[in-house]
Image (cartoon, rainbow, N blue to C red; front, side, top):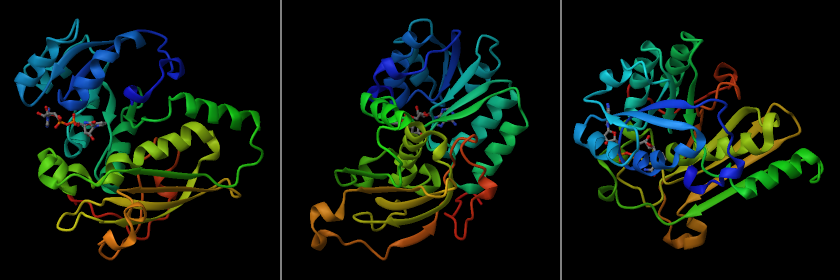
Length: 300
Ligand SMILES: NC(=O)c1ccc[n+]([C@@H]2O[C@H](COP(=O)([O-])OP(=O)(O)OC[C@H]3O[C@@H](n4cnc5c(N)ncnc54)[C@H](O)[C@@H]3O)[C@@H](O)[C@H]2O)c1
């Protein structure tokens, strides 16, 4: 997100925005102090742990800690709400914000599963005057992404046939090193795919533009070093786009078995899944994505 961004490449608001924030944990503590130069004023903070809101409000000029989320939503000073709580709360909070006339920007992963994605889209469509967005940008507003988008737009790279993304990182931490909500797909939505998959999709959309119009996504999850949990530790995905000749590939293996050497990989049988991931509405019509087998919705 902003910590990876060069502000020269970030879009500017055409008028100041007054933001309320629900969830004052790790990501809010990182992001909120950076927003002022973009014309975003953080005016209200709420958290299930009221002390967290008080503590963060003391560090943000002009921000007031509200006793709870409903008090924040009743404030006429707030244009939009940033939802920065664990993923299993995103859908209900999104609906609540809309019911109170607030636009929503929600942390990723936006929702837990397809069923929730459809409910979120339906809630957004029931409030056409309000915008609902998920912030899943991390690498798009970097000088490299900007340069790549420019070269593509200028045609300097010729005709594009495929794009491959490879992201690698250290092995996933043991479960007990994670915050409680991140230890299970029921609350986190999944492992590394739920956590980071949106970044790659958003990067592809941002750099490639309308040519990135996914039609079919085939993906394979792996659970290398994650036995005993329902959190995937890596994935391969191949995305075929409607733009026909394009065949974009996104590949990610957190804690890559290849890098560690095949013998160290004790991955269980790969779980094959046809994956749907919620991407901005403008990007793809979910109804048109063929889904043969979907990720299980914990709340279904
Ligand atoms: N930590 C990161 O680096 C990072 C980066 C990008 C995105 N995110 C996303 O941001 C969201 C929050 O992550 P985090 O790391 O800040 O979590 P966190 O556990 O540090 O903070 C979550 C906060 O939400 C509060 N909360 C929980 N349920 C609530 C509810 N129903 N109403 C009001 N407050 C509630 C908790 O009390 C806590 O203060 C997640 O969706 C995560 O994927 C986190």
